[in-house]
Image 1 (tube, rainbow, N blue to C red):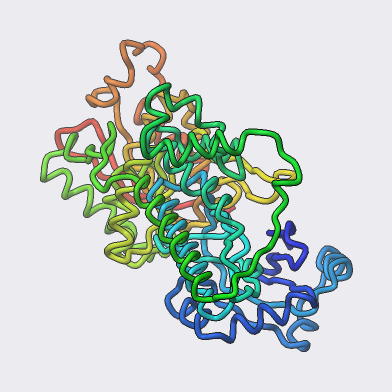
Image 2: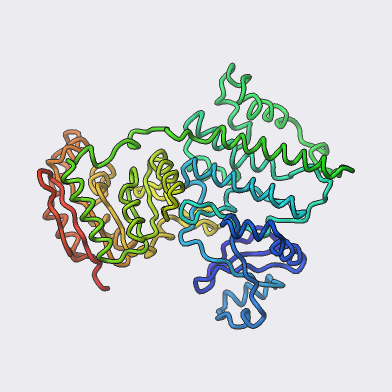
Length: 477
């Protein structure tokens, strides 16, 4: 059993025997149940925007297999009720998202906050950690974020939190190219305007949009804090006026995440790179056919595409019926792939992850957000490592033994991997005249080292190229 959340005193979430369960306290249970029975919640669940929930009966709770950890948790927290949610197959976190996904999570949060008003509820929390992606689709997962709202209340308390965790990170990424990983791994609760003010420059800070988003909030919020900062609830006599004020706020925040979101046509060094740079039409077709044959032959259902680049093999895997997690360190490539997957409704989750420096475990006692490798270990029946081994072996100086050890820890069954030899143009580009350091990187050594974990089921030398494709099957332990 593993506990997923504990910060909200109203409840807690945990995984037990592969099931996602949530315990709720007696005080908040009636609020949550009334909200779930309302038309807004039903509509959001049907649209896939809000996680589905089912309250377990007393008999269901008693039937849960008990261990010491679960018994101790239930004894200490004493939930009034336990709910079950469908499990998101591969959880991801904001520091692994391209900006397009953070923007989508922000717009979803505003959809829920604005939609909940119709049933007399408010969203009390506005953090991207309340959103997971089911493929390319964002899903809000925190039931405890909803609370009863006074009809005349014109204030949305999480507005500043939304600015810190959605708007300002998108702004910092767009204007100064700061990666979301650098922001959220260092600042779990996002960015303060004061942190961005030194980056704005002496003139630009006084011009829109930085004037309104950074300079004025930093100046007004950077002084002495005292009793004036204590929130004092206020309720208007006119509920319609309060609703108008809130709608105006939500619309302004929505304009912010859209304004600072990335353009659809942004480019990087790798975003326009495809296999066409190295392959003829004939050899590219042969490679696509080989990968398709391997995935269909093994009936792949859960695929990890390492070094996915533009995502053409992720799309291929999705087309043969697999759910795909695609990883690449290039945020522009992953953003493009997310747009494509979202538009075509492909079951692909693109993540900005450098497999040579994967996301660490973070949060309280390093347990709130597991590392990428901990989440990925044994989670896939097939792993693709196409045109990536030479980057790891040369640029990162990772031994072939380590590369195959990693692959074996990730796949339960199949590995489709590409050997790029020393005569290849890209190999030579990476070498930069250091041939003597990599004389051990031979195809024979590659095949020999692979046998520690895998059996070569099939291979395809690519005509006219110093490249070879391998379909490998994992050895029984």
